[in-house]
Image (cartoon, rainbow, N blue to C red):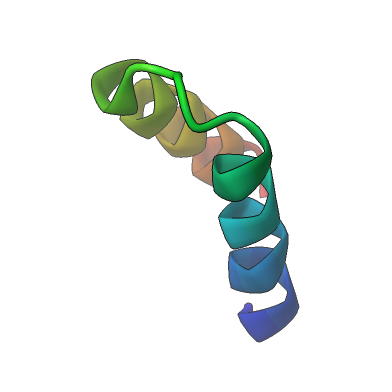
Length: 34
């Protein structure tokens, strides 16, 4: 899980202008996949 979190942090720094709510929905879908 730690590796996953680091990846998500990298993505967040890579896309600073994104809407956090959209991200949360995306992460929820991602978690449901695992």
